[in-house]
Image 1 (cartoon, rainbow, N blue to C red):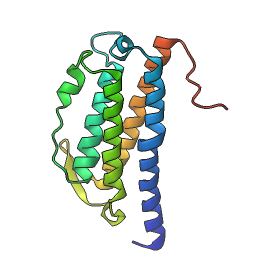
Image 2 (image 1 turned 120 degrees about the horizontal axis):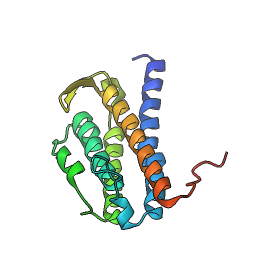
Image 3 (image 1 turned 90 degrees about the vertical axis):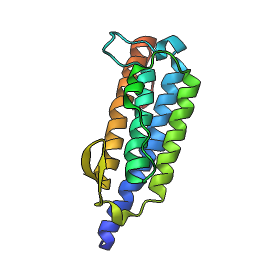
Image 4 (image 1 turned 180 degrees about the vertical axis):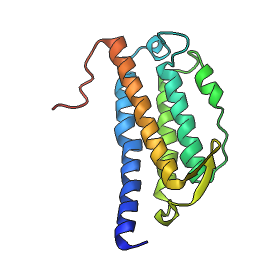
Length: 165
């Protein structure tokens, strides 16, 4: 890689690590602080996902795509269980699970050599590069955090005040 390409690759990894370890988890924590245990598992319809399901799903996705797919650890994900859960996990346990998951992902990305970004992986049946896997996780996490924020606003009726513009 050229010096410029190396700098861009390093910035990608730095930014992904920031989003996964600081930005998104702080928003999740704020939402969990505002929601009751009942609200965590609330769903408007049976076909919807609760905040609890979304958090379990994020943990499974991050571990499968980054810790396993990029980092090479064993893939032990049970994706159907992420959506089948119904109120079985407390919000404190869910928050700890998210924190542990992002810690594992951050460790994987901290040790990741940027010259491997274009290496191919098969993750969840998809043939992707490490770059694509990392990008997928960041954008996927963002989308579900948006859902968690929306559910929190619906259940609490309050502005979460993430940004003071």
